[in-house]
Image (cartoon, rainbow, N blue to C red; front, top):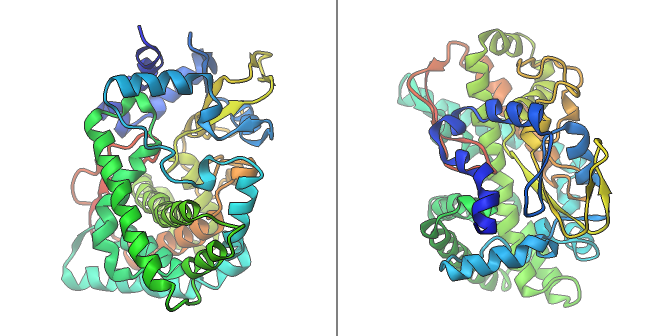
Length: 411
């Protein structure tokens, strides 16, 4: 049995429709029976909030899987099977450790501070209202993902980054494909690997052309700021420029699409909470954090121990061993959240969730996601109070990023 086969056993269920619809039954069983599970090949699955939080925040744990003992084994097997290795194709802060991570994050983090993000709120409100107006004008039903949840955050991040909003349709499929690159290797087929590779190449070519054009007329946007940093030479390489641009574009909308889609579905399936948010929009910020906890857009993360790392049960993760940090399982841990399987939009401790990760890799766009989620959800429930499901929701096939492909609703 190969390492891929052995450690892929726990991921195999992720490809089933039952798991995509409700992975939390599986997470509960794993957390109750093996909360700190180590496979024979030194891969750890952490499902307790205390362990997940500690693993994310420990500075001696790396986000770069190249430090993992399993990396070379997985890479060799992937090459033998004709599989491509695309997770780290782009030089991004997502897989970097200090000092590179510190440098890359420092180039863009000022654009995503809570103070800067609050300035986007009026634009976000106008955009959501426009999208709802357009949907209402077309009739009494819509696909909430296609008509609101997707165009809303992608327009915002395009405007911030300086990417032409008109190009949305062009890179929508690339984004969906490339987002699968952070799914665990064992559940990525050869066909999917090829699709991811093609999307990565398309994005690289797209940004190469866009950057070449922008160099002649720099603007007041993030892409222009990254180009300036790259031209200064010692702050950003060309590979890092493309990688950072792609990361900001994809991460800047993919997770918020899922937040809004998952959130509306959760509210429709818990009508009392829908009505509670409609009647009291002041709890919008808390409601967003509760939805992030309840049905996390990002289900898992990973870390590699660079030094011995002790878990809450006394087990020691040895240097080179890789940890799969099950964020979504930790967010339903009853030791961290009372009655965790109940949606409570007024939950006072919801902000303790790990949906944005933790430590130095805490989501750069957390403030933006919270504002976008609050604006979208409070506006939808207030303007469309009679909204209800108009068909079966369709889940996306992703594992790491959990979201909906379609959400038919009537109003």
